[in-house]
Length: 446
Image 1 (tube, rainbow, N blue to C red):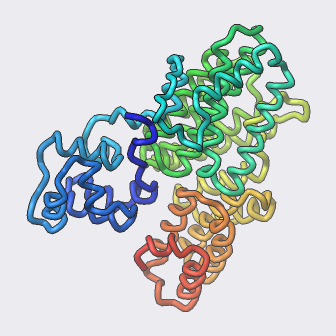
Image 2 (tube, rainbow, N blue to C red):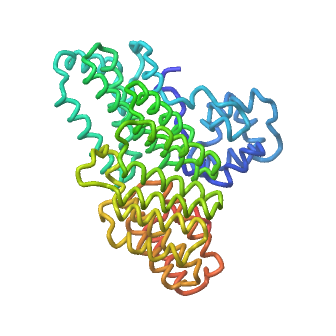
Image 3 (cartoon, rainbow, N blue to C red):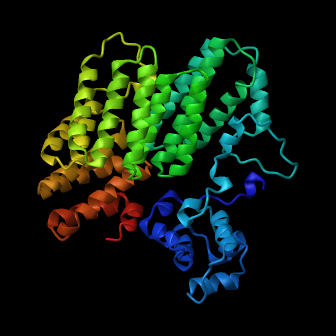
């Protein structure tokens, strides 16, 4: 199917909504179709066309007069509406593999048919070929530095605004760099390109993770691992595995989280020159995994290891650029969050509050995350006024960044606030929530 004709993905917020998840799990297609109509603007006639059903049949389903039970029909609905297979109890659908991964598997680019429209969001294969030809004889270490500089800029903008709008540009650059890898180049240049491609794949995975589109995120993280393996960059492989560990904690898969971070630590220990900062970051991810599992002693041990490694950081350590974000405020706030995950709110609160005071104010997503965590620890201790004040302040950075993970933290606090919903401070918080984030507040069903 031409790419321009492929159905668009459903909004991430709908795919992660508990009502949608339950409707898919029990195959209640009346509810699925109603949610798709109200939340994604896909009307019954469009549902019928996408799923190869008659409009009257769709209408009967929505009205509750007909059920859809045949497996071939369920598969057509999954493919037509772009509902991931696992949500409907199906095998992974072929379209769930991002198109960029098809390119990275070294398939020859196909020339588009004359009447085929190439999406404006990504460069077509003809553009990739022209760019590759133009750089074939001029690629140098300066070019690699330019790539790395652009990646740093992507990460900075991702922290400030979220990665959804950046993703087409990141994927386009990933495809371009993978195209360059097809040419024979000196080992130093080739290894540098593999590292850049791996970081672009990880960044793409991160934008999907932040949007809570976990299958796509995992596919790109896996691609990043494969690219890093080509240049035997074990520290970076450890970094990618640590990302996958963090994602598993959000998916409520703590055993997977621990397995990923254990593998990450194995990779880091087997690498030459792994720095204390990298080891500290990995120990903190291990603490998150243990805390999610409820392993108190193991969590405290991993926190201690993280601080011990951090104390060993030297001024001249050759830290990879991707770990520079893990500074002292980040260590402190993550320590607080690990204690918070264990239910140790009194220990967590001053740590998170201290880190927030010292945190870079341009990192809007981080400030929103950490402020909502602080509010939850305050509420756990019965400090309703402080919790609502902290959460209200968190709405400002939350409104500045497009992030489903931020929305998730907001929903968790809102749910925790339920017993106090009629208190004046809670009502004031909700009023401010509706003012700054009307789409999010609407999804909370207050």
